[in-house]
Image (tube, rainbow, N blue to C red):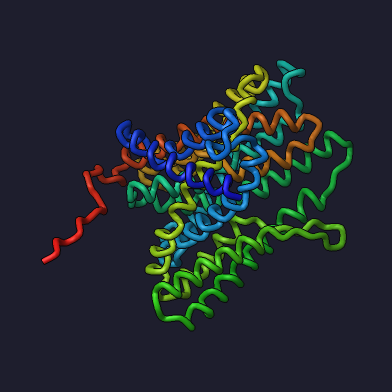
Length: 424
């Protein structure tokens, strides 16, 4: 236990210290946390096998999976705050249209490119693997995007639309992946399961939204019994932890697998709570401050769990580069076309696609599921390689796009430190 505590302390300190370097290089702090995770991971300092100096194995990192899941729950809860009715009336329809179209276009582009790669080199990638990777390509990482927005205090039409689209992206990606994975399994096994392709993904989304709504209403009801700011913040944190735990439940009912999407459940909890609680803005800001160390750990641990051994495989690198180029083109032109269709401004049309490039936790979860396919190990390794690239480059590109759109104000030298007043 003491080793894990020392590792967590090293992760926080290492991430924060490295962020001072990335600040001088004008890179987002998210990049520093990810690089710190890689350095502390089992392929760098962790390989020295010195207890407490980094993570000595991937198994040791996986033990801390509960930390990353909890952080992801708080991130989704915070994103739910963006779904206020006042904002949805202005941009809700456009966000839904853009969120669906750009995800579908990205999947189609990646599918076509990888299937062409299969036709040219059948031994490199199979059709089921290509179809599965196409669906995984639709997923966008909300955590990196939100951290960049919060670090630079980005504000404006592009930022508001981006947060809505990223949130919608999870639901769309879930449906696309479930359908594609079902088709890929059918091609591999010779039988189609309509339950897995249609029923289970729709049921997962509906149950996730229902559970999130119930938790949001319950949080608002319980919160009314407390009046001090510290106790209200504590009950909010407790409810997010409870929501994360409930969203991890899985069971079978009549031959149908029942599960929940952690992101959707926590996002819906935040959405319902912020729309019915008159003091939700103040509570959300306090919760944000409390979970900052947890968010840093999320990215450091995410960096540590990246398996760098995938870089040793030429096939993985080839398919990975093709996947990254195809997905990037799909995201950019998909967002561009959908923005033009919905009549968005030039700033949003030109820059939204770039801000949708980061990819991490959701895609990795899909890749783990896809690894059960005959060619699933390749899909998992390709996604690992892509996540490594996107998480290191994506936050910087998001920052540049928001800066170009005029929604990030130039940074000044500020400090939160105050000297103690001199004693009389």
